Image (cartoon, rainbow, N blue to C red; front, top):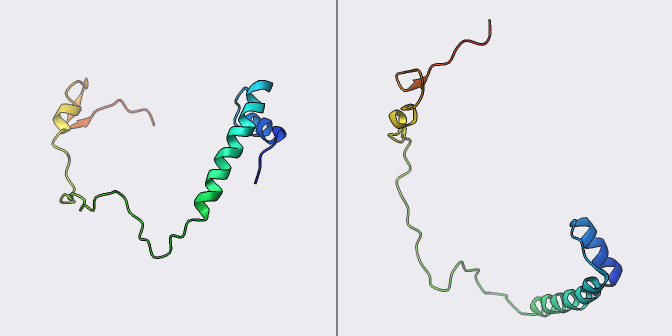
Length: 95
């Protein structure tokens, strides 16, 4: 697959990027080089290779999944003008 000048201008317009004529002609070569590299990567045989998330195998740290109130309720309502049992008190707005 190759990219031409019209494609570069169209992609720039869709991305809402202002590209001058000189920049667009330079990007044609750069994008074609990138696509050429991607085509080379597609030729690599990866059958039997397991996906990995890092170079070193490691187990993720896990924590106990428990529901708590965060012990921050009193801190959250500390600056409120009116509270009751860690709830904000607001004036009634619906009749």
